[in-house]
Image 1: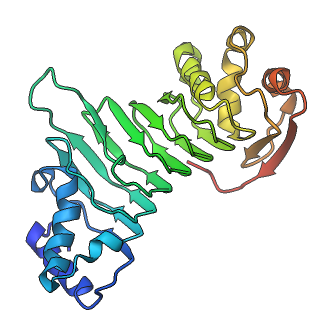
Image 2: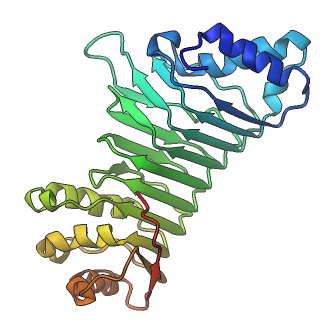
Length: 291
């Protein structure tokens, strides 16, 4: 199936979906195709569903509640059209590449894809690539769970989701986040990657602390060992920048194995306890690496 053309992919979905006129769940798994096959993000999704299901005269794509996109390359030349999924609640995007081709050098390199999904409550993006994109905007009035995992490139993420209660990040330490209305946030899981070269880049640690400032409403925080190491690189930053979490009830530290000297992280513990003196700290052992 590798290197299939777009019309062959449609034939494949034609045979898959035509017998089912009341589809409520759809998984799209396609081998990577050249970027040139797609002119904008919505085309591969909306047009394929319209051309397949529309042949029967029943526009069933409007009742899809769960969609998974996997192994697809999207080339974004213009703002994508409205994704017409009025009852969609869960969207998973795995191993997908988004590439932006602005009309001129001065054009914005920002994309926003999800605000027209009125009932979206769960959004998961895993191991996704953003090419020629400076700002990735996630706006959703009903979004409750957001997961960004396998993030290995620098990009600013702007999140507007007033009902968001759970946020997961798993990726590189250079994570730039802007969010000012996460008023319902309860749980944050933040796993990152430590490298010795970080001792030359205090700005990366500041980015991480800035991300925490955007997530300050959380009362439960889960960190991996590498996140603790990152925070320990520049203790003077922890002294200068107050911990933004003011109401932490639980701080969970996830280790693949117990570090030899837990006392090495005393400064980090104090950092969190100074702003949340009643926080309960617990350690979990997870032998499976998170990244």
